[in-house]
Image (cartoon, rainbow, N blue to C red; front, side, top):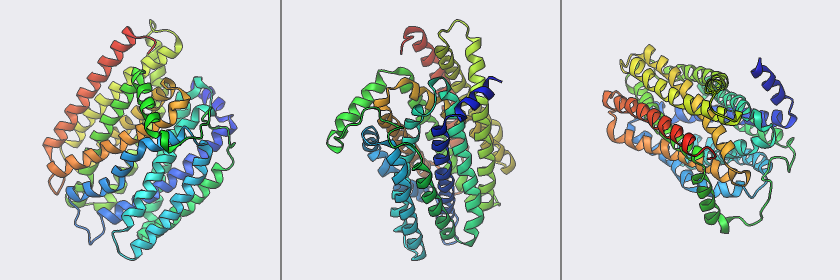
Length: 428
């Protein structure tokens, strides 16, 4: 009942609905682009995919923008975020069209256009959570994050599903449809108020102050232990999830018989897991917070609920891999993907909320850009490790065992540090 009231209150905010629609149309297009790229790079008949080739592809697409991420964060704190949401989809639409043409020419130069598309998307996705506190009341921020992030993830999975069907006519067909969706995103974003998404104080200096601004942002995070711990945890989760994902692609490419169709199935099942994780996170964290009656005020109880739920999710991921993925049987492996989806989305919703509540608005853009940078760098690191240790068919008990142990250690580490800091530093 409380959740229903909260959802109605959030939904009454007109600008939230517009920001929400902007996210959905963009992430739907993202799903179409990702499935088209994945099918073209990993499952084209002429491609002989190995872990090393997968690592190279992910590094080319993600690593440059992991390095440039801090620059986008400082710019987000100095440009109107509404303008970012309006113009970045136009850039992506143009680059997708260029990428389509390069694919038709059968040249690997399409990766350069893909690099720009995904890099600009990082800019766009960092602007969304930085803008969210401007369109919903602070007390409903966790619920708004749940609705926004979960719906966006589901939109990506739906877009991937639609893209899977469309790309049967060729990856280029899916990319052309995605370009149209990016144009629609820009149109929707134009309905948002030009000055309504922050930053609260607009500074005109940009690139020349990037380094100074980023250092200030990092210092700001270091002074807020909950945010720093949350960012470290999501980075670990992303690294481990990346190992599992590269293993999964190789298994479906070279071991499991279902091939690209099996990837579509496990993607859909993981998407259901993402949805479940997001739906259960707000009520569970609220109940955990209420059970911790000695923690006050209410904001601290909500924080305490998230601090306990995150290690529970990490432990759940470990258990899911241990009992469902270790046998390397396809139906069980798909079920493991569902469990990882639940944990991934639950952790992300909590981390987004903790960071939003812990940092000041003037730093949010650069903090979320750093968040995104860590997200990408962790995945690239996972791809590089996978290239060194995974066999061509992806089947490795050692790598899966390492992933399980790391999830357990991450859960214990988060619980220990969060509990200690909550006791010794209540104001942090």
